[in-house]
Image (tube, rainbow over all chains, first blue to last red; front, top):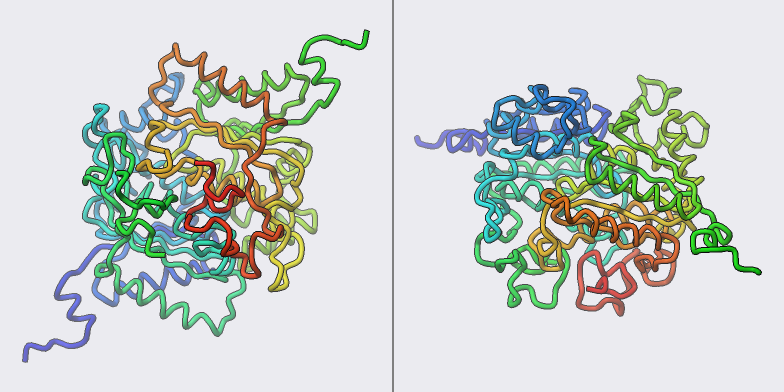
Length: 279
Length: 279
């Protein structure tokens, strides 16, 4: 018999992957904490290897500052991006920054788990990005010569990896639709999904969003867990957001979208190949 | 003679105002530091009173956590928003949070000065918002009954105040236009301008943006300074972004923009009365 059992064993045989979960909630017993644990268990049961950066538990330092560069002259004027490049190239980054970069390089996929606070990531997660996504690692890669603006948006050091943003939202889904008062959830997350994750070369899945998270009745948790489990199981098979590659021909020499594409539309969704974000 | 002198004396006589500048750059000698100092000097010369929250100099704690509520039972499960409300209503907020709220209440206008990092505010500024914009102070105000969703977006405790986002951007302006690869700068800032500042009732001016800030030649600083001085002088006279009031009739009972408004457009700009952000 060739048959070796259920889906999970089959997927072990096919491809065991590495996943980094970056978790940004101060309360382990929160919904975010539960979703983080659920994702890890789901992936491990499928034969994958999971590492978790629990930013609050790690007491992650959020504010990017001169102390990120231990060998820098503290009296020198700090240009963060240039100091970042010097430290990255010279192997003198802060050890906690280097450790996170190594996790990113190890990972085949990254999950960011956080509550939406003021329509963006909590400061501690933004600070993980500000510090870990260093010059030479996440940006400043490739040729910049006034005609070409680097290898980014579909190229970069993290090419070939996948990313999933998993977010809890206090408000109702209607308020986050294309015409909802808060703005479309994917437009609000665009600086993160497109401007940060896709920027480094990662393929980014549609965000997984739990709406109404502030008042989620206990009896609804099972359905929330099922929905997220399905997304996590599809982490390596789901089609990513079809963001347009910077250097793929859709942008002109000013890096503006060609006039014949996404005509009549505006907003972040024009940077998806469908032109309207599928809305 | 009724005439009492030049413009600045006249403006003192007419209306001396209070301005809070929130500054989020680690290097005092940076372009951001210069713009912060320039704004303060310009406003003081016009007879206004300026206070500065220099977040790096204050060593502002960015990560919102249970320690923000000194009288909370540390063994209790932390729901940040609820703990925030309890502390706000009970007068038991962390003293540094209360101090910033008092500055906001004192101010007639707020300027946020920061470099755009990963298409958003630096973590230290996001953490100022996460912690200072408390439940009962900046959100959770008014009636929430399933038909009405509070007093926000054009109403709120900070109604009558003005806000200006002043940001330096490393990249080129073309890349931040309506069809630029990074997305329109006002769409990237929408979670801050609309979702945070306008949310609390403030009238928000168009962001002031210095592009190409990473490689700004010294000889161009004078022009940059002149342009910013003009914006700062117009802080109380310039027309704000015409964001639509949540409870002003443009949204239906699901808080979705009425079907007859901004037809054919999508993206954050539909929440401006012009429907297209004037682009």
